[in-house]
Length: 109
Image (cartoon, rainbow, N blue to C red; front, side, top):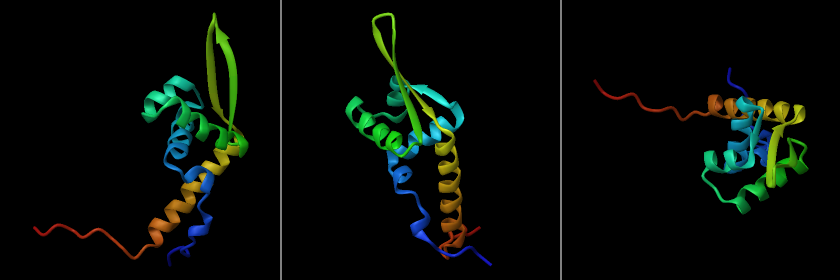
């Protein structure tokens, strides 16, 4: 029996494309510099900043601003709460996909 279809189980904070990208990247890297994220996600400073702030406000990431010499350095780190929320998000997506009655058609031989 498949899991119940519950779209409300999807975390809106994580579900945005860039926020999902940040969380997915940090799931493996644990910490990343701002410019690294900007490059990997192919976005602008302003757009990334807005999405990082939303993740930070939710407690999913922590942001550390320091300097390397005279150059500003911003590091983003996934929090324990963020890791847990990301796993829960992935579980919810899996349940939606597995509970869907739509399956890809097999190619004819």
